[in-house]
Image (cartoon, rainbow, N blue to C red):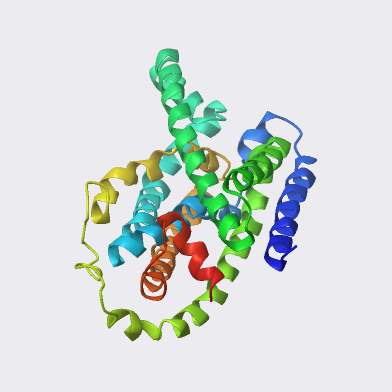
Amino acid sequence: MSIHLGLLIVYSVLLTAIGLWVGRLVRGSGDFFVAGRALGPGLLFSTVLAANIGAGTTVGAAGMAYRDGLSAWWWNGTAGLASLVLAFWVGPRIWRLAKAHGFYTAGDFLEYRYGLNVRVVTAMVIWVGTLFILAGQLIAGAAVLEVVAGVPRATGAAIGAVVMTVYFVAGGLLSSVWVNVVQLVVLMAGFLLAIPPVLAAVGGVSGILSAPGLPPGFFDPFHTTGPVSGWKLLAVYGPAFMLSPGLVQKAYGARDERAVRVGIAVQGVFLLFFSFIPVFFGMAARVMHPDVASQNLVLPTVLRRI
């Protein structure tokens, strides 16, 4: 067994154990769905940020940066800008309604505001959309396992699915929040430790700027290569990060309106700066490894080979 595979196994077991341990604290529907409406700014910051920078957005943004360059910033930058709308306009208002009427899910709000038929139709649409989002997360996570530890793609996806299912079923939002805290610490520590060696390997920022053979517009933040790339992501993805049922439900879990505003707003500002990190790795990978076969393999490849 390689050291990378061993660390990934320990990490997966740790997340599962945390979910099961926190699950013991769940005493009712309120704890499961909205964490007892007791999340302060710090926990709300952590869980929303972890939701916004999962495997899909880090691996996906790096892959887009490998292809398009700096304009891939808009993938996560869009989430940061939309988070500010959620923090100051959508979140506080919907939290007040959730608190007053005991809403646990976005469906509860839709039924209250628009009726049962709208709730049913929206639930069906969300179900389909969530299936695609989950598939993207599992594929991205499986790509990391494949490159780092040699785990077959199907097996990696199954491992990710089992871990997520166990810790969420055990304690709902409450366990998810604490698992997110651990995930966030590990993710940030890993990226920060990886930046210096990648920067050295590529010859610094000047090494990227002067690299030959890069496509036109690689350093243009507003460059687009198709209908869904660059700044156009703001229109496509922006509403999802303002009104996503998952993010709205996390806002439901806040202990008060201040926690919604502060926790989600600080998360949005942090995300605007974090957005450059996967972009850096993707651009560096284009210089260091110009023959990567799949965009999903860009981030794990550059991290594995430093």
